[in-house]
Length: 237
View 1 (cartoon, rainbow, N blue to C red):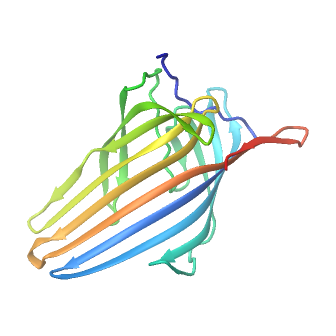
View 2 (tube, rainbow, N blue to C red; view 1 turned 180 degrees about the vertical axis):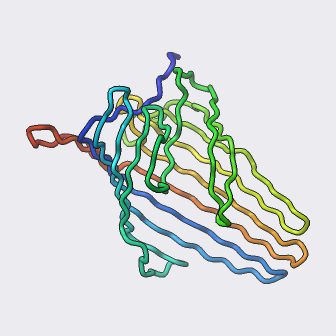
View 3 (cartoon, rainbow, N blue to C red; view 1 turned 45 degrees about the vertical axis):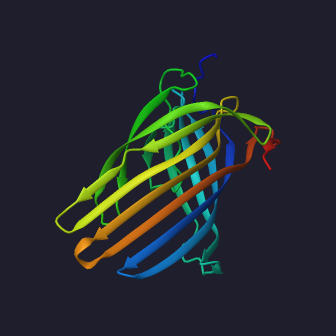
């Protein structure tokens, strides 16, 4: 099979509209007692291409709008407002600058074309809730070609390192896994689904905490507004 060149192909004036679904399942165990809480949030993410630099670096404006929030299936008041951020990203998905952290992580692509079955490694730094940072490697594998809503995409599997930290009485664990569907023709992320599991235990008190966060991102619409103010694009439903 021919090699595949994975890279983003954005144009000035394009706007990518994504639906984002975040589910956080939290389990707390204290001896024989167990409590479980499930938060579900839907967001609308708008990514506008403000400028394309000569080296194919993209200046983006991103708006994140909360749509709904459920806790154990019960509607909750959405306490966070819509947020705006600016981001600079190269054609391989590497974030060069950002005014804030995005809830959506795009896969980073290798500089050279790849073959189906090939794996590449992308280092990342994650922020923990206690303010600390950890460094992990993410392993991406091009698993094959898959049809997604009548579009041909590359199925990319992702797995992170397992991070563990153990002190005298406390142990911690973190791992991520998931997949992305990327259209080479359009140079766009069509869908991604990533699940991150975090565990923490205080052995002396027999207390255990588990958090499983699943983030699903789906492209709803890509539109292009030209200089004549007409609009072209495709809608994925």
